[in-house]
Length: 274
Ligand SMILES: NC(=O)c1ccc[n+]([C@@H]2O[C@H](COP(=O)([O-])OP(=O)(O)OC[C@H]3O[C@@H](n4cnc5c(N)ncnc54)[C@H](OP(=O)(O)O)[C@@H]3O)[C@@H](O)[C@H]2O)c1
Image (cartoon, rainbow, N blue to C red; front, side, top):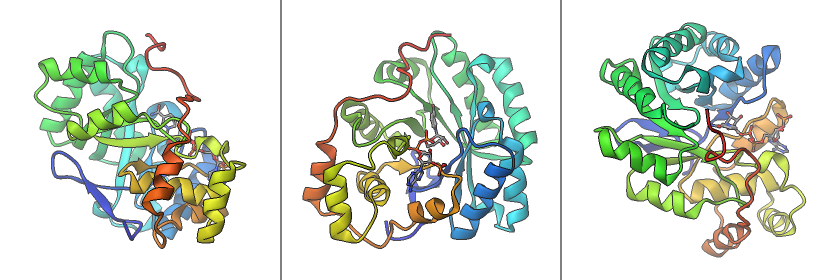
């Protein structure tokens, strides 16, 4: 991984950049400016979701960027209240309209919930078969959810986007995804900024002349994890992208992984029942 546009090849052959911009909790002009800045800096992957309420702004910034559509990778997600077969198809149309796109690169089920995700997945399969999405995947799925899908679906999710950072490396889930050719993608890859004071990370950062966020993101890349750090701050959007010109040693990667404390900062998917 030497360049910002370097990609992983998903289980259906589609290329997805290892690196992109997250947009959670960013709205209005703030998110529009962040996407514009990111695209100017060479970011080619943007992660949004219906529930973020920013698909229109994301779409407008993409349209005015002048970046060719086929070199961009846009992810959005179906929200919990839209789960179900017909409701998902409708939600997809709404997301496309807001984004101003005919085809979405990656469409994800945002959370598994309790008992609708199989119907939702059938809707995603239909969208995929109709060519309206280039890849379909899931988010916040545990191994047992993935096993359930495997029982009656012919299409293996291309991606599982989950909370993942040095304090919560999700080894078992990550290994399962590797084994089943499901690309793991980290949300909150920076643990939302909570690792800035960590001494080990500061020490490694000092040795490489890099910052703590850059070391954390590089650790993600070297573990073959897709990362989508969010920032609306232009200097940080740049900082987060400057991670393709250095390499952590195997020992450094292992020592960062050893920070794992099973520490989730977001919701436990098994507790979010709807
Ligand atoms: N699928 C899901 O359920 C789910 C859940 C959560 C998030 N996500 C996706 O994953 C993306 C990333 O996760 P996240 O936004 O929760 O967390 P994150 O990327 O780990 O952290 C974002 C926070 O860190 C700050 N930050 C960013 N770069 C920094 C830097 N270089 N130095 C210091 N602080 C920095 C940002 O501040 P500023 O913006 O103020 O600069 C923001 O407060 C989201 O934006 C969203 O697209 C998905």
